[in-house]
Structures are given as C-alpha cells and as structure tokens.
Length: 310
Image 1 (cartoon, rainbow, N blue to C red):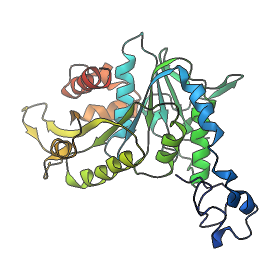
Image 2 (tube, rainbow, N blue to C red; image 1 turned 180 degrees about the vertical axis):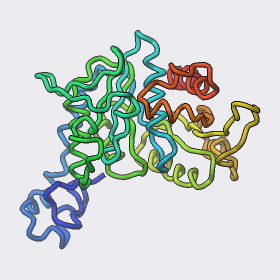
Image 3 (tube, rainbow, N blue to C red; image 1 turned 135 degrees about the vertical axis):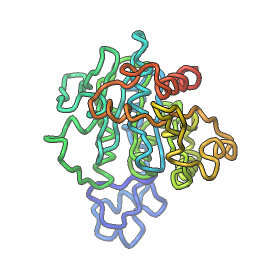
Image 4 (cartoon, rainbow, N blue to C red; image 1 turned 120 degrees about the vertical axis):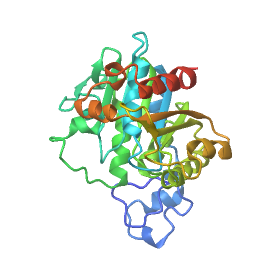
C-alpha cells in the first residue's frame, strides 16, 4: 500500500516502497533525497489520529464487492436502516465512493449541506440516531463529475475518517465502490489501528459476478481484513401475482452458496429481487419501513439480527 504524493512524478513507486527515491522516475523529484533516506516510510500520522477519533465507535464494517451494480450501496443503506431501527443504537453510514456517490439519494438527504464546527465536519442526519457522510454533500450539483486521481481521493477519505465529528457510535458502515484499488486501500490503511470488525461482501448469483467477488476476497486476505460473510443479492424473483419464483440471474456455478463452501466463508443470507427496493431508493425512503413484511425486508432483518449483531 505505497503512498504516492499528489505532486509525485509519473511512475512514482510510492513513499513506502523499497524503491522510493531510487528509480529513474525519482530523478528530479524534490522529495528524492527524503524518500531515499527512508524517512518518508514512517507511518502516516493520520493513522494514529483516526484511531483516537474513532475510539468511540464500537463496530466498523466495510461493505465490499469486486463487481459493480450488485447493490452494495443499497445493501449498505438498508443495513444502516435496519441497525438504526433500534432507537438505542447509534449508526453512521460513510460513502467513500468518491466518483459515484449515490448514498445521499438513497438515504433521502440529497441536497443537504455539511456544516463545520470546532469539533470537525458535522454529518447529515436521516434520523436522530442515523448519520450520513458523502462527498455528494460537497458537490454543487448531483450531476457534477468528480475527476480525481488516487492521491486526492485518498486525502478525501482521510478527511472523512479524521475530521468528521462522528461522536459515540455503535456502528460505522463504510460503503465502497467496486474494485480493489485506491479507496479500498485507503480505508484499510487508515483504519488499521482503529480495528475494523470486517467486511461484508456483496454478490449476485451469476458466475460473472462471483468471478470478481473472489478477487475481492483475495484482496481481504492480502490486507488482513476479516470477512464477516457474503450476501447474495438479487437472489431470485417471486412474482407478486402467481407467487412462482424465477431466477433472473441464474446461479450457473452454484451461486454464493457454493463459493462460500469452497472458500470456507459464512453465507450471511440471500436477498431476493423486489422492484420496490429500487423505487424506495429513488424516493429516498427506507424499504424496511415501507414494506416491512416483504421477503426481501425479512431477509435483511435476518442477516442483521443473526449475523451482524450477534
């Protein structure tokens, strides 16, 4: 997880690399002598600052998937709502999808502003016990594109973790973009001293999704991030009229269940497709509150009660 400064030359090996200050790409860089001396390899002081800042957060859960479009943000939002349904539980949802921040829309707080005080940035509150932070609150318009390279993304994530006044929390849910790159490395690095409970990995049943999810699991293993378990999202569709179940995304290789058996991971649950989930996300409403007796809502509640909070 080498750190690359924002003003670094092209092909910079990173300040924590063994090649720091020694490669041809380092020639002419004003930091070459510093990197070559090894002084730049010292741990980022923000890691300890974040540890202190998040000392009042009991549980930190990262939601991951190697595949895009499998419903990570939807799951993260519903997980946050489910946990916050207990009025005595303090919950926060952090959106680190810097280029595609959809959490403000899903949580019904799009257009809200972040305020700054002496204790840091104040998150936006959906309920008295449910806070949200996203770069979406810092954009002039929901249609504005964030065109940033890795170092600037990393800096933003550092600010979210260090400078937001989270207060005392029972759960901090971190929603990530697809993949295994800058945002994921930053979250793991900056939370390394603050103790992450682990990752919940989201997939859909078909092999094209599982293939990328296996890469995400390997990523977790390489960076020593515990895997709490896997959720199979969009798992079958029950017709509301005839009640027959159709596999919209057929599990041709056994789906998440077989993958979990092969890798020795817990399958936390299967959430069926329900058009009302998408509708409620677009309207910024809690699906669990709007349709509490649906099969999907019961699946969410089952995952939270038996697996996340046990």
